[in-house]
Image 1 (cartoon, one colour):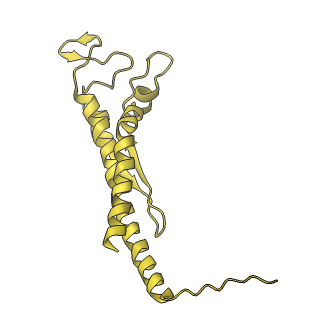
Image 2 (cartoon, one colour):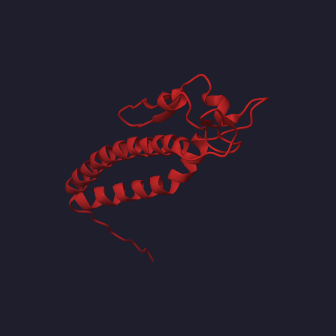
Image 3 (cartoon, rainbow, N blue to C red):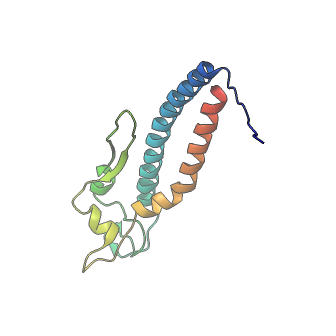
Length: 145
């Protein structure tokens, strides 16, 4: 005895058009959310430098204590923060960059200076918001299709 099933799919061209439109919308949304996510991390990192600190007092300057984000003194580190992108048609990459000479020394410390992290904590704080933004973007693209 032979058992067979026949499946017929109608509207394939309509489905292809809808998927193509969804793909374009997702691409636009993904690029926007990726850039906004990087900007959020940059903003949080910079804001962490502006709050009160509990390190040593040097004249009028209150330094940060180990484990705190760096205190702003000359604004060199703060002003060196920026976004850089390396985007292609299919991949969106944004980098949060602090390129002042002492950026890595503050984040990771040295033999003589304990770390004053600002970037890793900013990412940790932004992570949940970033995930939610991608979910909202995907849902929005699906609803708009």
